Length: 303
Image 1 (spheres, rainbow, N blue to C red):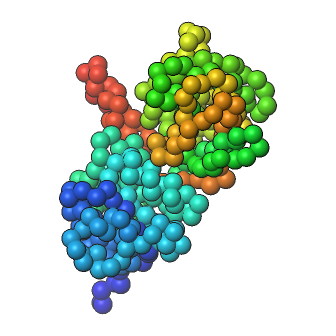
Image 2 (image 1 turned 90 degrees about the horizontal axis):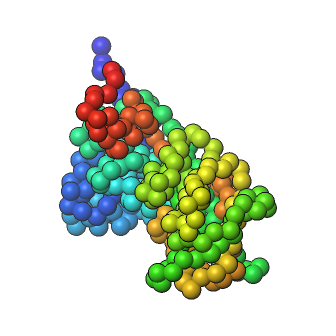
C-alpha cells in the first residue's frame, strides 16, 4: 500500500515571535524546521528575525499586522513579558497564541522548552484546547478629551510617580461610589494578571474562567482597605483627586502622566486573547509548579 499522505496541520500558517537572545534564536531555528516538516507555512516576526543569523530566516520577517492578517497561530518563545507584548499587538486580530517558556516563571508561556517538539506536534495534530482570556479596555479622560486609549491583558495601575508621596483618588463602579482612598495607588487586574503585580500586592488569584476583575490597593493609608473582586461587566472609574506626581501604567508598556481630576475608565474589552494549550494542560498544576505549592510543606502532589 502507498504511504498515507501527511495530515493537514490544524494550523497551516504559523508565526514565530521570540525574545532576541542567542538561546531563543537556537529554539526558533529548531521550531521553524519542525513546523516546515509538518507542512506549515512559517512567518517570523520582523524584529524576531534579527535574532537569527543574517539571512537565516529567508527574508520572511512580518509585522504584527501582517501576522494578524495572514496567520492562523502565533507561537511565542520567551517569557511572560514577550507574550504580553505579542498578545497586546495581536489582540484585535484574535490570532491564537501558544507560548514556549524561555523566561522565568512563565505563567502564560506554559510549554516547557524540553517538551517543545512534543507539545507543538500535538497542537498541530489538533490535540489542544483554546482558552479565551479577558482584556481590559482603558481610557484616560482629561475633562472631555480622551488623552489615551489602550488595552491591558494583565493590569491597569494608577500609582504615584517619582515623588514619594501618597496620591488620593475616588473609585466608582457603574456610577456607584465605592470609596475615596489615600495610597501609593491601585491595581485593577484581570484573571490573567492576578498572578502578576497584583499577586505581589497580596491580591487574590482568579481562575481565568472567573468573570471578574481584582481591585488591589497599593499601601493604603487605612488598614481596612482590602482587595475586592468585581464583575467584569462593571465599568470602573478612578478619579485622581490629589497628587504631586501620578502615573498610569498598562501591562508595564503604555505609560502616561496624570493630572489632578483626570479620570481612568476601565471596562472589559470586546476583544479577547486566545491561548492555545497542549494536551494535559492544567491551570492548577501550573500554579502548583510555579508557586511551589505543596513543596513548601514537603509533600508530594496527589496522583
